[in-house]
Amino acid sequence: MKNPPSLDSLVSALKVLPGVGPKSAQRMAYHLLQRDQAGAERLARALDNALTRLTHCERCNTFSETPVCALCADPTRRQDLLCVVEMPADLVMLEQARCFDGLYFVLMGRVSPMDGLGPREANLDKLAARALDGVTREVVVATNFTAEGEVTAHLIAELLKGRGLGLSRIARGMPLGGELEHVDPGTLAQAVYERRSL
Image (cartoon, rainbow, N blue to C red; front, side):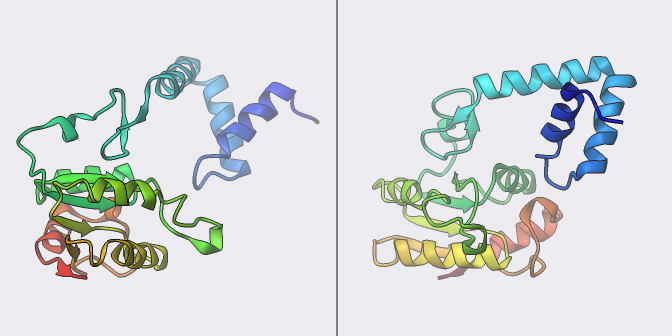
């Protein structure tokens, strides 16, 4: 039996989520349509609202509803210290660990030649402009300790070396192959405190 086109369309849309295959997407679609239509409507409204209202912060590149996000606008943050992370979830983890009082730059990805993602897709040009603003004195590279994260960290170091900035990399207190959003706050805090020069 063939599904109605609208159901196929919903299943196909749900498959864009990471880790969701065809069977999981189908189960989600049936659940939303049969058991939780109110939840489906909330999800649709929230997604529409996010797509309409969210943009990127002009300074740190994270998601924001205003041109400059609340963190970048906070005068109590150290303006001369910039931490580079791959994704907004990594920024959230560092904030939860309460181990960093500077500002951030969110790459919104990482360099991954296998996936066809180069320096442009990782926003390294925007990072260079932000880091070389005349206020930043040190850049802390906090990319993940994956192969892609290491390549990204290396490219950032090459991009910013010899530009009058201090460069450091968070320490390997994190597990090799680990990602920031999955690490406990204590381990993450230790990695930031024990960062090393690049």
